[in-house]
Length: 578
Ligand code: FES
Image 1 (cartoon, rainbow, N blue to C red):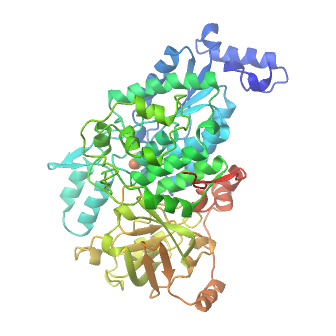
Image 2 (cartoon, rainbow, N blue to C red):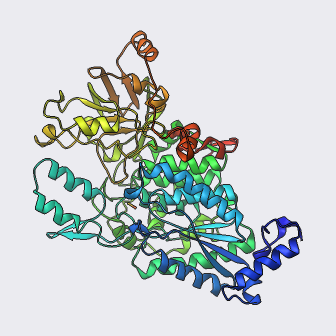
Image 3 (cartoon, rainbow, N blue to C red):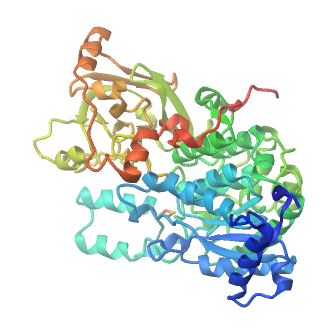
């Protein structure tokens, strides 16, 4: 049997120079765990187990592994769980994005290195699903994504709360002096009432929904809560489907096509999804040889409305969307915007999956396309002399009054500088100013932290001001809201124009016309560019940090490592054909 045709335990034999001996040795070792020859002759489904004591968003992974195993065995194959890196947003220093590519490499290499005919990838917290999909595209072994599912909401003094939009809302109230130390400690107990991912339309929810739209997840798999029986049934189904994927050789490359990515982008826009979603989709598409076309994405956004009333753009939580029918309810409304003929992990098309899912009952979470929650897509792409490579604003979560705004820049040179000075009572700042944060991009921080949600200076917040225009090369949590311009490209640490802004400069933001302008003459900018010095990071001379700083790409390329990206063969969205 040719090496490429090998299946099950015979796949990818370790090199000892004698393939029969390699198999003999492999079987001897795995039999040490009590397997029979019958079990070892079956197709193998690997299960990427991302449980970690640091990751509450993955607290239910052990249960899900058991349910996936059940599904695999019911379909006649052998399930083999294996560990990979797990990343939690609040437990990764300096930021989770710094380790996303490491997890993608871990996933790719472990899927490729170990014998498996298909793999079930269990992720959930923000960076884990993109990392797993990036690895799956590159390994191109049949794969299906399973997410841990959203946490349930909690209750604080009679008010429904959930991570992490409410985390930020209560913290802003505390900073403004509206609530005291006792109450902020109280609500800290209620914001994450159990395991699972953030219950709003943050990055985890966004990535779950766009992954289902991509065709890489069992239908209806994005929304069941982490603690629900539905979640375990989806896990069992994922195990069964993985066995079919292995039998049919249905690889990620056949599912994650240009049109499938367009479906994912449509769902990103229609859900008011996290701005991180665009960075991650750029990275996943990049692994498939597709370049994200930001301007074409913006053009899509003009015609795809936001349909979902979830925080932070709206008022509800993921458990509400699940009760409303989950993604299939959204997809039904979007049918005219979707490529329904895309093949999915079920072996059927997206359109066939939608038709097979229950729905049609009365609900108030997903608006009909004729009466959208917001008339355009959730995100807009800005261009101008301050962001020649583009910048993103989540318009559905911004203040309408600030969408066109001209103001004086108040510049912070780094995340640390912002932390040190933003609450200084002597800071020269007014509510009409524009806060600018430099050196918070992929190379600047490094790792492009979610620092774009800059705090309103305390003395301004104390006046009851809830929003100001804020501009940076950082990212923002999908759970945050405000008139916040993000992902300014090229980043300031790479010598982008953002590095040249000085306090007192005037900046004009015009979201309707998609422009971001630094009102400084070209001559003055050229002089400032002469004096530019890139930041130096301690520890940048060795190890993973060195690899990261030398090879990370900009936000429009998904912040992937350049050596992991194949040559581009197309763009996404592609040329309009309908
Ligand atoms: Fe894990 Fe929000 S912190 S999903």
